[in-house]
Each structure stands twice: as C-alpha cells, then as structure tokens.
Image 1 (tube, rainbow, N blue to C red):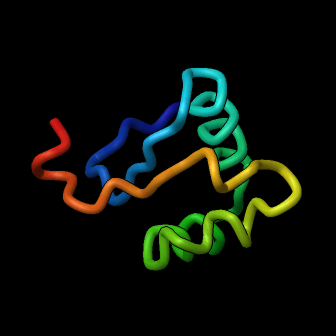
Image 2: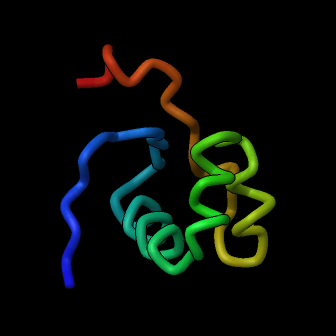
Length: 68
C-alpha cells in the first residue's frame, strides 16, 4: 500500500544524488518512532543512522518555505 505525502516536515540537502538516494532509502527503513524523532530533532539523523550514512554529507534545510 502506497501513502502520499501530506506535508513536508523536514528536509536535508545532500552533496550529490547518490547520497540523497541513500538517505531516502535509510529513512524509509526506520520505524515510526525513529522517523518522528528525526522530525523533532533533525540533527539526530547522524546518531539514528550512524553506521549507515556519513552525516557530514547532509545539511538540514532550516526554512522549508523558502526552499522551493
């Protein structure tokens, strides 16, 4: 079953497309509690995905209204 996004809560900027794809994949593998935690505290992405990604390759987009 596929779910469509209702609202963009948090975003990261990746250094390249490969890194962005890896981050997207690993976020999708998180459980609901972990996803809610990175929405509340985007800086914890490196801690939650510590052995899967290099958090230095990503930066949190602070103001989503100006991002588009």
